[in-house]
Length: 310
Length: 167
Image 1 (tube, chains in turn cyan, red):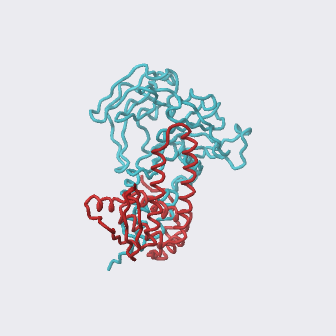
Image 2 (cartoon, rainbow over the protein chains, first blue to last red):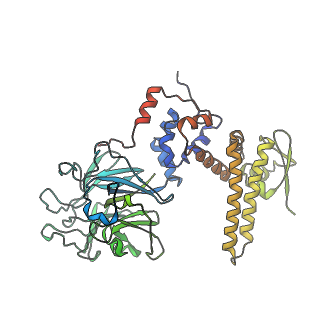
Image 3 (cartoon, rainbow over the protein chains, first blue to last red):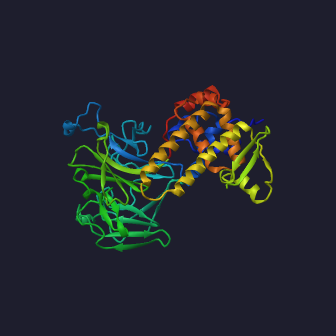
């Protein structure tokens, strides 16, 4: 016989549920160990969806970041050559920084050049090179990029997280290695990139994919030519693209931006291999930046970043 | 002259309350609109709990009225001071409830029965905040929740890490 155990004895089911949905995400792990029903509910898709719909989730920044040795000093930056990457989490509400435990499959660090994206509260790590053998891991790309022989690609792929399935979209108008994908409303924009024979000479064009019709629309003069768009494309007024790399000299190299609601979180460094500095821009403040005070262990190179709603 | 209503608790205590204060309760508002509220309004809420409910409603009513009367001049500072006052009041209100779980649960049930969404939401958040920073065993003890994990299951879930293996 199945015994029905109250979620919280003394409270009706719907009120107990209301209480659980208000738990802060940092309490979820411990809360799943309280009882079988707490565990089942907190881990369910419905629980997440309900919290999301009712504005009870919080947006945090997740970064794939180079891990620096413990005895690290800024002035000794160049001498440190650790190639080990891990996920760093920053919660803008609590200003709390945290480094996550390694993914069990990669105890010595995440794949090199891997990218992160998020979907419905989950962090998805895509692609990269195995840190040991430097061979590409399975399932990289989307959109553009290049093949094993450095030929630029014009293909774009969409990944369905729930079904773990990649689907190829129609071809773009041209090859775009090192391009950047940006979602604006119902359109997926691919900004800049370069053709095989034009290594590193970034295009000024962009194109947008309409998910309904499955068609690409090309736009010229959408991006400042010869500037790398990777992780630094911002969308300004009237949908015009700009580069966050131009926003402050301290973050002009290896710029990485993460959008969290009306805030943009930007990091980068002053010179190649320099320590990462962090800024926050609030919407409607004319791109004014506020610098964040960040601990030395979070000054390592940032490879990719995204916002996760948890 | 404010319209007053008489509320009768389940243990027969009478509370005289202004209409505006008590209309925050959708349940009572409906009773008044339906004309069912002549004389005393009987409620299935104890006098101890009802006193707490009314304390909350009066505080909320106070806040709304003052905001309406404000003109824009000097509003910001005044608002800040008021926000501080409200925060202080809320903290005191919360601390009393956190210290007595039975009162908290009675109040939760009453806010549900009287249909006071703001109070219900506030109290649910309070319960959630009480869970934060505690170990599973402490949470179970606090709410009398039975541990239905076997020792083996408990060992396994304590050891698990946060990463899911999806290819």
